[in-house]
Image 1 (tube, protein in one colour):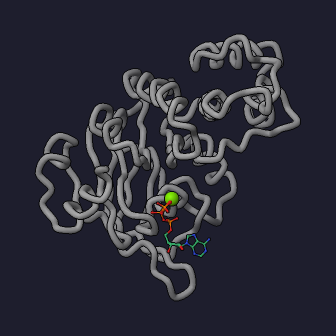
Image 2 (spheres, protein in one colour; image 1 turned 135 degrees about the vertical axis):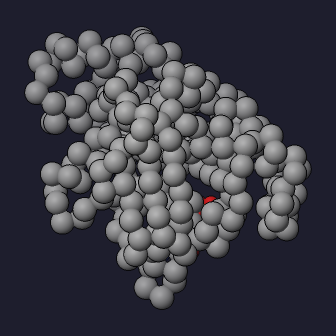
Image 3 (cartoon, protein in one colour; image 1 turned 90 degrees about the vertical axis):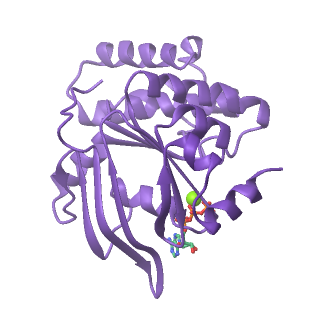
Amino acid sequence: MSIIDSRVPAIHVEGLRKSFGANEVLNGIDLQVEPGEVVAIIGKSGSGKSTLLRCINGLETFQRGALAVMGRPLVYGDPAAMRQLRQQVGMIFQSFNLFPHLTVGKNIMLAPSLVKKTESQALQAEAQRLLHRVGLAEKFDAFPDQLSGGQQQRVAIARALAMDPSILLCDEITSALDPELVGEVLAVVESLANEGMTLLMVTHEMNFARKVSNRVIFMHEGRVHEQGGPEALFADPQTPQLRQFLASTRH
Ligand SMILES: Nc1ncnc2c1ncn2[C@@H]1O[C@H](COP(=O)(O)OP(=O)(O)OP(=O)(O)O)[C@@H](O)[C@H]1O
Ligand SMILES: [Mg+2]
């Protein structure tokens, strides 16, 4: 894991506004995430959760406000800075997005082989180590379609880790999985949290958010509407919008 300067916030977002045409999706987001912090983002469909994550790793541009990752401000016009940002911020999606024609091992080695000047043997050893870490040591030569959804998502996590990111963004990474496969993916995320990885994760798994996160952020209409420690936030929501949202997620 990267050496972390704990004096600099891992993520700093200030007054961030983002529109798609006339549709303002992020209406002034202020957010700071400290190194090693585990932050869960919850909120209704369309509240801007994915858009916020995509802004943080440079997949979306925004119109107003400021964003810095590990103390470095985001500058769109600077390709070297954007490349560095993407190396520091790993992202995992709901759809696993593995390359179907590459083996698991090659999926993991691809990005580092393009970016890092490392010998292929060392890359292979690192890929093996990461596969072991996500509990898939024996799958190095398998193809994605030979794996279950949960296994594919764990490979996607290993692939993100291969770039040695300082921060991991997770966007509903268990939402496409059959219920019996959710636990194995969440266990990997929990182990990363315990090892001190900075995590910002959009999730519908309220029990998981409660158990693993240091802080929960409730987004509503493109703003951070309410936030707090998981126990307090779930037990004692302060705004009607959060109360209503929590009621709608209980079955
Ligand atoms: N590429 C795009 N072009 C136009 N509008 C978009 C685009 N991406 C997102 N939006 C709009 O931005 C709003 C917020 O979308 P976003 O995906 O961030 O919500 P979300 O909170 O992640 O929702 P969900 O829980 O359904 O994933 C929605 O109104 C959506 O239609
Ligand atoms: Mg989303």
